[in-house]
Image (cartoon, rainbow, N blue to C red; front, side, top):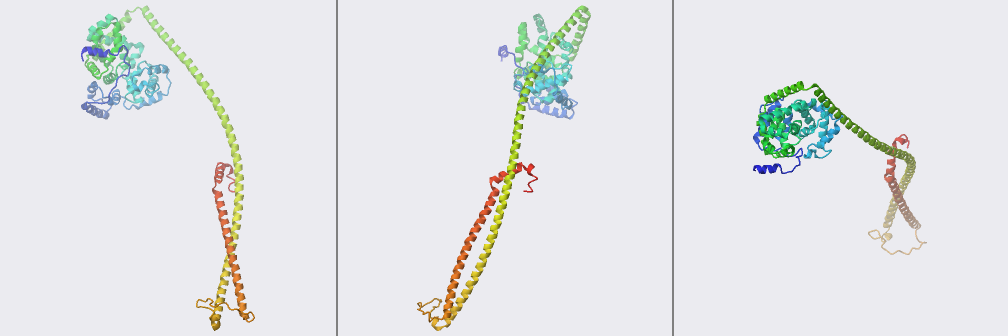
Length: 567
């Protein structure tokens, strides 16, 4: 790609600035040796958390693998498994902060290009809001400062809320980021002076060009120091800068700043005042959207000749210069300046007071609206309560009525059951009597039949003993001759009596058989009636009506429990 093509690429998106949170950072690592080296370092580090392995600094310069950043950042910040800070966070998020409205406003503008923070009221924005609010309560001196949400968002993309809050506290206190916001931004002005002196030493022509254009350091570098480059630049570059910042400390900001200025030197020298400001705001962040460009910048930052000795020297110069200014300054001018500062503070406080007053009014209106809503809900609930009371009363009356009906039905069933049992007992006695009578008749019939057979056999024997009479019967005992004409006058009276007895016995036998048949028919009818009565009793116990009564009995059990044993 030629220089012209590169320039076209950087300026291809027009004048719209790059949204914070832009860019995709892959978790894949193609260098197996790098992964192996980090694995060995982490194993050794976890064995002794108080001592950082020597290889960490060199590895961090190449960039920490995305998949390991959350763990390594916590180790670098010295808050790995910091239960004290994590427990403090759980308490802090339950407290109120006077900066909640300001925090909410900044949350909506933090990393809008990232899917995790894009949705209003989503998981990302809610987590970011809680962390920012918790820090504003934790650090009462500084509270919440604009831009803090960008740093918190970068941390949230690599670890849970509690750990992200712990690392944020460590960065603000141990890495002295909060000092930039203290005492009228005195420390921040010192940083601007140190960067200005570094430009004089390392990029003299660019410094002179800025002076000719009337461009001051704070016009473009404020966000660099206050947000650690997280507000404007692509995420791949942001994360790599935080790698070095957590590993080497706060002076890394100067290394990155000088590298940015050097790599954009030609473009900046060709621009006027407005063009330079627009370049810092729009085009410079877009220049590092590719990993290749970001790696090139970080390599330049690592090799930048920015030493702590040189920064200490500039700090002494700044302190001396400020002391001289204080000595040379006219007391009246100092008083006027102090008065001006106090007036500005007063105006700021008045503005904050107005904001708080507006918030109070809004809160009152909101509370009034909520109160009206609660009162409406209260009315509705009272109406519902009245309805439910009436319904309860009706239900109790219905329950009482059902209990009475239940008692009546139970009494009716009890009487009906007693009647059926009495009838069943009576039928059982009748059937028993009939069975006994039938048995007696059967025994009597059997005896009479036996007697008749014996009498018949005796008569046959007597007949066979007579030669004249024996011819009247064949071998089977049947009469073989036609019935002779008998003269009654000549008939033996004894035979006539025997024939008369036979006819009487046959008639009595026929009557007995008829009585037996009739008794058997009556027995069958009674048995059928008995079975029908038993079936009816059994059916009456299993009908849906009985089941319903049982259900009613269970519902009214508490009221009828004492009466049940009597029933």
